[in-house]
Image (cartoon, rainbow, N blue to C red; front, side, top):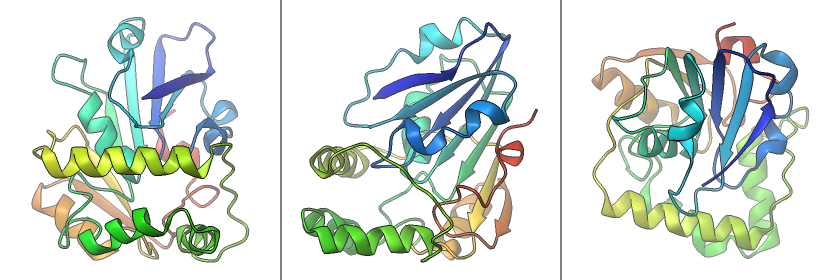
Length: 217
């Protein structure tokens, strides 16, 4: 796993954002000016090696938000020995990401891997991410080969491992999500008695969900 600070000015609080699959810190750049605290972005889950324990130890308060497959990744990385976040928000994702009832149907997940080398397929996926809303910007500097390697790693980890322990206190569900079906998200979080809020947003929420709602100020 990779991580980088968007802002680091010696604050007592740290806001940690786990990016979705295939992205990097660029898509979360607006968080730098939206949060008063230090801000860390985690991404590229091609392995689970990370320095979260040493980073979190430098702060008195921790706030977590995660998007898409980052919801699963954050729960895998935020282990029991780490300090519990003051709040943790899951956005358009679950802890059972390859699951016909609680996540993405296995055949669709496998199909994304199979077709990813094709440029037309990648463009079609991007359109599904944004719900064909051209006002949603999702910049990324990563190659498709890097994205494919990450997705293959995540698939193997998800299928080989038990569901990670829940660390979330609330969830936002995109009613227009064409990646993680809204009904599957709702079923997952309500079964675990997690507060849910459904919003009329596509899977990619950038510009549609204010960062002030993602992280408490």
